[in-house]
Length: 225
Image (tube, rainbow, N blue to C red):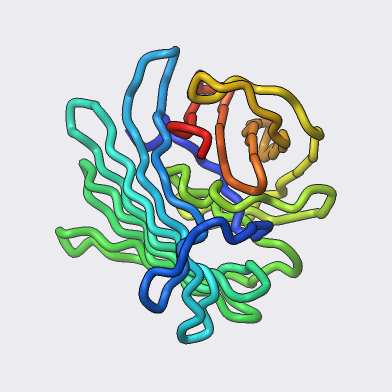
């Protein structure tokens, strides 16, 4: 199931606080994305973005995606970003089959990753961290919740293939889109890696819609508030 969901995701922040304080964390955004393939509902992803300011972590993204397939696939993500919107660490869990956990940590020079499985077939490695803006290449929509910065050469971290990919990001400007039965003005961003395009719609830096034309997949936020 996972290869039918996104493989490219941004980890650079352009967000505005729209939530309220919750304990020591401040909710920036939260909601649900309804996921369709060929116009048929195949799952949903529930997400929450918090401003945390703990242990050098400025932003934390929590996400759970559940799919209506034969295996009831569940994907969870925990992504941590620093004050510059750059990734510090991430954990991606896939219920499978096969069940798998990917743990990624980053410092100024190196990206380290570990792939863990219940049967003990674990492996990992490191590669040199590229300069500039970073992208995740993962199997769910969570990292799209932060808007990529257009017009800058960026590198994508492909967790599956353990390599970097060039990503081209373009800001296509404001357009009118129908979301949740309402007509809204949104900013359209295009991200392309290895010929695969991801179209992203944002309203006040809140992710409203994602489309992957090659896979006939569309994810739309429930409601516009």
